[in-house]
Image (cartoon, rainbow over the protein chains, first blue to last red):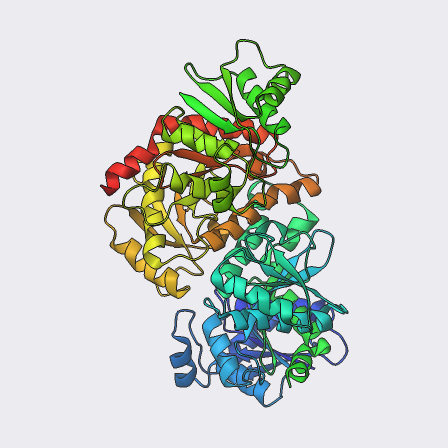
Length: 314
Length: 314
């Protein structure tokens, strides 16, 4: 299993990225896993030495000449910089030279890059980004979309429920994930026009265990395994949830559950609905976040969720 | 100053409501303030005695025969039950027999009742509900809309910014409240189509101090005094924010800031943009929430914010 990591993407790249990879290697990787760092090879190798990466670590470096900056226009940058670390990452993923590609770089470029290279799974209307929301009683709920699609038609929203259900089934080994629609009240007729219409579509979908609406107050309380939302609402909610950790730190509070709301804890958010394992990390990703994202990538490759989604929709 | 309170609205009414009024009276009310409890007079009077309300408390009772239930259709209920506690509350408000009307009852009936009785201020496209969001460095931001309008046109959203700015100016004595648009990134072109369009309208409005976009992660961090959002996103965010208190309690954490996220702490949310002081409280309102809502109502009457809004728009 080869996990590719963009060494050049992110506010603290390449240092934090390489440090995170070194941390992952030192903490021990499963048998057969190799980490492929993509970017400026001499710089990366110097950093691997700086972070005292053990000599026998399963790490390789794939050189990339160019870098897509955080503020660059995604589509333009990808077409003009095919030899960027992101461009090369997707090339390797598409050619199945690696089984996952992760980056803390330009999110738009990661999303567009996935759509152009491994492409949307046939039948998926809009691939989306899934966030892991820690639950008080343990485990995580998958919330999607948390930012790729700000405006969603009802059928797209409803499909997120199905994609999320399959993802949760194979990632968390849940027989019948409870799927809920983020809304502003319990009743069916509550909410925006899109939410009301999506509610009906979700209700009619016999392939999922739709349990009805969920409100903001229950994002952490184990009411659902899959939380369906448009990318605008999802992004705002997810970021507010992550801020809980920052609030606690500002107040000198240390707590195991609140620590899970720290973005570093999971480390990344997968793109769901494309023919490959693609994981996006926050631009501000620290080494710890990168290390945890690598673990997430490994689990995602093992679960093979995207293949299951493709089978379900075929 | 007369503050009317619906004694019959809410999951724990009339007990919790009357207890809250008794608490407010015992803790001392400003000179000249009278609390008018509306509902079943004998029941209310018995409860006032039960909660050991001092004999000389400035509390009167106005009898109401009927009650609008929490699940009733707002418009139908209001037209069929003019002698409900909510119907009578708005009648008293419209006739200026009271200066504010508060209820933990049927939110839809409260909103529709306000629109029918005291009506929207001339020029206000859509009255909305404002939530107080505690800020880490102290004070509160006003977030609106937190639930009345799930779907908003860009011009409605932009107007929330102006209404909120005036409201904050006179409620918090801020010369130039910072107005921000809840969005999914800093850049102007980010977000849903409605958010992008609203951003431009807010930018062009010389009457407000528009500081740009704000993300979910900054809801508590003193980035803005007024947070503009559609009612769907606002409701989800506001309820998630309130849940921080519940999460902390579940984890046995006590903290002064997190305690402010407890819905009881402020006690209510005003309807902004109608010709009168109307405050809505959570259905689950406890006595403490009611007590604090009364204080909020008093401050709102003193600030006379709605008159200022009417002047600004005329």
